[in-house]
Amino acid sequence: MPRTEPARGMRDFLPEDIRRREYVIGVIRRVYERYGFEPLETPAVENLETLMGKYGEEGNQLIFKILKRGEHEASGQADLALRYDLTVPLARVVAQYQSKLPRLFKRYQIQPVWRADRPARGRFREFCQCDVDSLGSTSPVIEAEVCAAVSDALTELGFTDFIIRLNHRQLLTSILNAAGIAESLHGTALVAVDKLDKIGPDGVKGEMRARGVESAAAARLLELFELLTKQRDQTRNVLGDEAGLAAFENVEAIFAHSQGTSAATRLRFDPSLARGLSYYTGAIMEITVPDLAGSLGGGGRYDNLVGMFLGQSVAACGFSLGLERILVVMGERGMFPPNLTTTAADVMMAVFDAADAPHALRVARVLRQCGLRVLVYPDADKIGKQIKYADSLAIPFVAILGGNEIAAGTVTVKNLSAQTQATYDQAAAGGAILEELRQRG
Image 1 (spheres, rainbow, N blue to C red):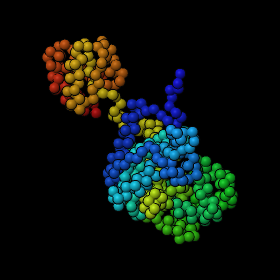
Image 2: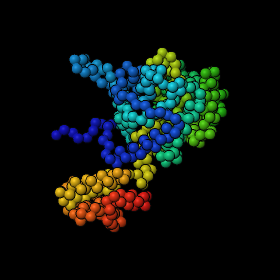
Image 3: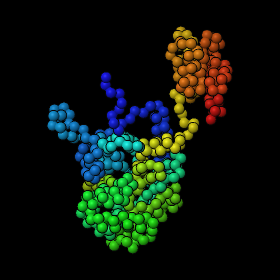
């Protein structure tokens, strides 16, 4: 017998799962659109050369490659790959359609991505990202707005304890220099620093030593992180180069611009925040909650990425919320609204006699035209069996259409929770059911 479970790190979504996902996506989409972001979709498959070299040494290893097909299959070579994130495809789209897009292009994109990662709690090989990006401006207003947008989205979903960690890639580079880490080792050191939340300070020290960073420099780096986290105003005293100071002023500007937004109370300066993706060029952000290892999302400025496709720099900044982790936390905390639709229908049409099925279908159409969701029971089973089926699906009403009702042009509606029933003209039944649904809340 073939195996029935999905591939490791992939999932099937049953009706209740889909309803929860659509609820969260709907909230996020509405918030993004309130900020003037427009929708975009890109293919699940990209050319391999589009993705390679954009995500750093570890990211390249997590790309799902697709082998050549047909006569080239025997070569064992890959030419396509599953989408790793939504940012690189966005950069490709901007380069491809630059003449058709506005100078300041604001887009949101909610689609699945794939990574050959090790599955864990809230971490899957196929998962959905909810991205929001602005291209065309270097103003810190952009960072303030994307932080506010994701803050609004999480707040509307019911989150109250999240923080947005903020840092800057050039500032991080300057801190590495101040700690005495050779510039040639910056990239490999950041790979270790990016794991600080997962493996802790001692783990980071050990990994940096394994990557060739001197123990004293690694220890000094972690000391600086601790100092600047507690005393942000000491940053200017630590930095010894103009680029680092300019980066810090940019961070301060983002804090200042965010004062009038919902992100004001959420932003925290975190000089250790690294973000593993290599395309970041400026401010970087990440959202965390206390009871989740890892983040609910992250992002930053990537002013050079579009230039890899276009041949000229295009200012860009964005943020990505991870749908799967949001769903995990909301499920564990019981955050979904109690009135979230959990049934297949509002009404089930019961059928007494197979010959009456055409009448049942006609009445079902009348009810649907009123805006109700109607499930027609297809078999002429005993009425008790049909009602039991509706109750098992938590369908609140059963519409009963027997010979007397058909002759009189009426329909009997049974309220399963209240254990009451009433008979209505078929044209009036829909309005009566809707009114009872409204009273139920």
